[in-house]
Length: 104
Length: 502
Image 1 (cartoon, rainbow over the protein chains, first blue to last red):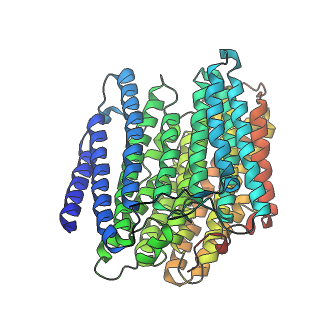
Image 2 (image 1 turned 180 degrees about the vertical axis):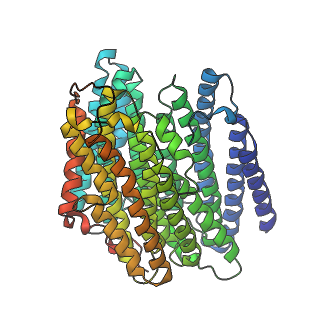
Image 3 (image 1 turned 90 degrees about the vertical axis):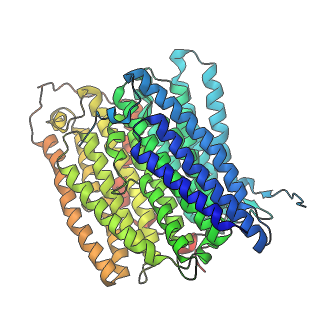
C-alpha cells in the first residue's frame, strides 16, 4: 500500500498548519490553520486504519477516531468563531497582535 | 461483513456520568422556565447534582473492590474502566466542582451574567473531567479532554463586555485548540505504531526499537506537548497568567485546580500505561519541563503586584512539583511512590488553592481591587479571613503541619526513591524552588498582618454564606490532610491503576 505518500501528505499539511498558527495574525486564518492540522491527523488515521485492516484481525479504531475528530472539530470551530465575533464587537478588529492588555 | 453486537453496559459503574449528564439537561430546561430573580435556583440544582454524582462514586468504592469495565463486549472492553485510581479522582473533580459552584453563586448572580448557561457549562466541564479519570483509550481520552476544555474556553470569556475577559478567553482558546491539534497528530502516530488506540496496547508497541522508532519518538513528544499546554508547564504556560487574570475569579479557581488536575490525570495515564518502555524519551523531556516550570513560575511570581496573577504563577510552579515525580515514574523503584505522590499532591493542592481563591473573592468584594496591597491590614477588620488565608498560603509554601507539606514530602520522597543522577538533581532544583516560593507567599502574609489598611476603611467584610461553606470545606481539608495524611496516603497505589502491571 502507498502508506508513505499518505503520511507525507499528512506531514506537509501539519507543517503548513503549524506555520499558519505561528505566523498569521488574523484570528480567522489561525482557526483555518488549526483545521488544516486536524485534517492532516484524519489523513494519518485513515491511512493507518487501512494499513492495520490488512495485518490485524479487524478493529477500526482509526476510522472511529477520525469520525470523533470531525465532530469535535466542528464544535471547537463553533466556539472559536463565536469568540472572534465577541472580540470584533468589543474592539473592531480581529488582529491577535491587539490582544495585549495583560502582560508580565 | 460486520455483525453488530451491542456492548454490555455496567450502569452502576457509569452512574456518576449518567447523573451529571442528566443534571446538565435538567438545569438547562429548568433555566428556561425561571423568572430572572429566581435564576439562583440553577446554581443550587447544579450543586445538588454534583453531590448526587458523588453518591455512586462512594457506593462503587465501598462495594466493588475490583476493576470494572463500564462497557464490555467485542472491542470495547477495557477502554473505559472504573478502578480505584479513577474513583479517587472522580471524587476530587466532583468536590472541586461543588466548591466552584459555591464560589460562583454570588459573583455570577451579581454581575448579571447568564447564570443557567454558566452552570450548564460548569457541569459539562466537570463531566469531561470525570470521563478523563476513567479513560484508558486514546479516543476516549481525546473526547474527555475536549469535553472539559470547550466549556472552559467559554467560561473564561464569560464577562462579555469586559475586554480583559474576552482576551483571556481567546488566548486560552487558541493555545488550547492548537495544543490539542498537536496532541492529536502525536496520537495518530501512536495509533499507527500500535494498530490500536487502547493505552495498554500502545504501551506494548512503543518500545523505541526497530524501524519505526523515529515515529514513536515523535508520537510520544507531541502527545506530551499537548498535555503540557493543559497543565501550563513552562515553556507552554504563556496563556495561563493572562487567562487567570482576565477570567472571572471563580472560573480562575476552577481552571487552576480542576482543569489542571485533569491534564495531570491524562499525563499520568499516558506515562504509566502508554509509555512504560519509552522512558528514554519522556524522562529528559519531563525533567527539563519540571525544572523550568518550578523555576520560571517562581521567579516571575516574585515580582507580581496583582494577587490573582501571583497565584497564577504560583500554580504554574506548583505544576512543576507534580511533574517532578512523574518524570521519575519508571526510574529506580519509584513507580509506586511517584503515582501516589501525584494523586496526593493533586488532592491537597486542590483544597488549598480553592481556599486561597475563596478568600480572594471574599476580600475583593469589599476592596474591589486585585492588588496585593489591597490586603494591607486585613487582620484589623477580617481576622478570620486573615487566619484562613495564612493557612492556605503556608500550605502552598509547604510549611508543616499543613496539607501542602505532606504533598511536597511525597513528591520529594518519590524522586529520592528514584535515586541516581536524574532523581537527585531534580530533588535539588525542587528544594531550592520550595525556598524561593516561600518568599512571595510570606509577602502576602506580611501585608495582611503587619501593614496598615491602605484607605483606612476598617468596616468588617460580609462573607456570603456559600463562600463561608467553601472556606470551611477547604480549610478543614487543608488542616486535616496535613495532620492525618493517612486518610489519603493509601490511595494511588499502583495496583489501583488498571492494566499498569504487565
